[in-house]
Amino acid sequence: MDEEISIRSCSLHDANTIVSLGIRTFRETFDELNTPENMMLYINKGFSLQKVKEEIQEEGSVFFLAEEAKKAVGYARIRNSEKPKALEDRPALEIERLYVDKKYLGKRIGFLLMSTCIQYAKKNGFDVVWLGVWEHNARAIDFYHKWDFERFGDHVFMLGHDAQTDLLMKKNIT
Image (cartoon, rainbow, N blue to C red):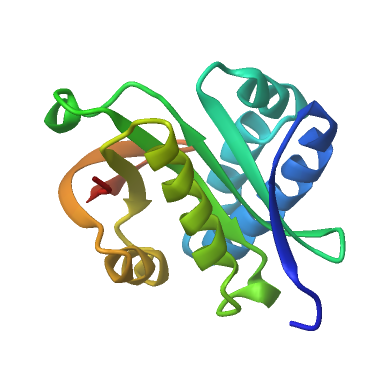
């Protein structure tokens, strides 16, 4: 990396950037392991400009954008969402998305985004951060294990018409 990476929170002005980065990183991560039909069904629903604008404005939702020389290279979304039953007794924040441009994998972008998410959670009184990760996404699972996330369950994630299993993982931060 020639340039310094900066992380900042997003506003509605960043919606187009999040849409394009979101589609690109999602495809880089999952295209090879899923059908084109299911990928397009999910992308068309989950990464429309209107959907991303709604997510940016959703109460309890924050997007963080990683940039190198003003170029978006990764992003994360955290949200104070409905918690899995196993976490109902604790203040818990979901890390719903954390994606890095393929060209920047292994260059600490994920580390910086995760650090930002955890720092935000601590600052805002959460005891736990949690996430869902596809059971076949070994690279992400390894990354989360390095951050001391532990599995506490699973749930179904619909990718188009394909019911997939996401592992639920959590990290205590207090």
